[in-house]
Length: 182
Length: 127
Image 1 (cartoon, each protein chain N blue to C red):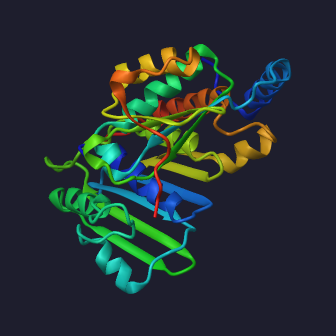
Image 2 (spheres, one colour):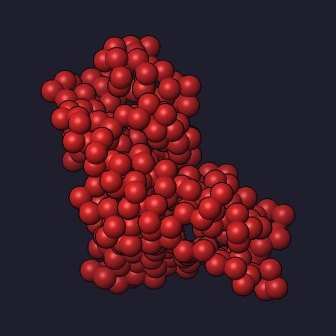
Image 3 (cartoon, each protein chain N blue to C red):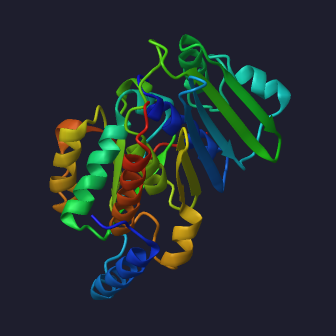
């Protein structure tokens, strides 16, 4: 995992596996505070206090097919390497909120990578889940909410290639306006 | 380029509706890209990007894409499962963009299984 976009895809897929109906991904780049934060909030099944602690253990997983779970430990490590940290808050039955922080200009901060393809992959692969993607760079903001798109397209599947093409266009336009640093 | 708006979405909706009423073979193929941590770390994201590009380029209305989690064969990721309607699912191992393109053109469009990349037939049983 060498890009933050890959970590975001991974954690958001976890949210979907936890039965989330809506996943909100918020990226905030603040050059004055030299801070990059990534928040992923879902309304999935949530975790108990004990489970939150154990999620950071690479040899803990809820899956039955293998004996390790590296997603959270890898992201926590990426954040620590870049002078930040990973914070996990959750309530059983209500959902989970993950916040990863990084020093924006830290030498060891992983590059963001292709965030637009992360969002498209999430929407395409999980067409029944809604995604809210917000990206802020200092005072410029961009937001995408698939709930609004779903309202418009009615009975069309969210992952129809024409719809995905439209969403990709909207994201690329938005990102070219806010000019992310990461 | 003019800014994309909700109105553009309405036009797309009308266009797709027209095209869909011309075809009856909906959901002919289901393609699953395995997106666990292991899959993503070994390049499932790029494989998925390629697949979506190919579907768009071919205008394949009848191919549905979905993602799934890890199935325990992390060492053989990226894994892609192709399920043609009424046929056994085929699992491809060690996928990359080029192999995905070949599988899309030969298997998904033409129905010819790409044996050299196949890991297994049938679906896994998740306990």
